[in-house]
Length: 203
Image 1: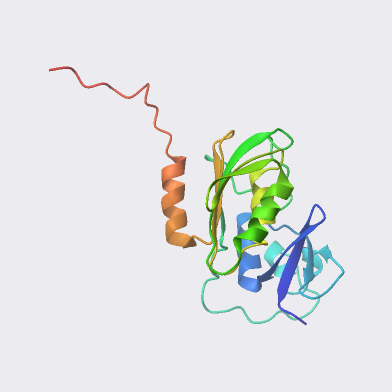
Image 2: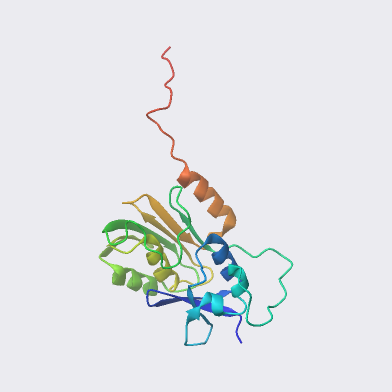
């Protein structure tokens, strides 16, 4: 039995993900007991809490003996968001602004796959126009997380993606790594009140 999983959200499948990635998703609240998952290669999805290796992530006893926990801490998922001070969104969770048309800027750095597959998926999501060789302006009612999940399926292990929701001041990215993630979060979440800042006295 494979120790990788796919996750089904709104009729679309994402993954496969390793055990450490699934553990990170659960810790972030993006994977919950009711999330529909399947072992890689299986066709039937079921609640994550029914999987003997995933059940302990939700404080539930597994139906079969679980494998020994690894000694090292699990690697953080390579999916990140910077959405003001909001909590990380769950898989398939509706956002307040979902269903409202928004403008997105998508930038990619394709190193291991052809850009044509990514561009085709962008045009499938909504009206889009290329503004640079690997950058597009997109208009759609989809949420930023749904866009990211759709586009990462077209990326390889070395490819990078950054999405900005210009309408709602949100960002999401893929494959930048923990250090870059931390820097981007700090910069994005800083919202200095310029109007309230004291002005220096002239002279």
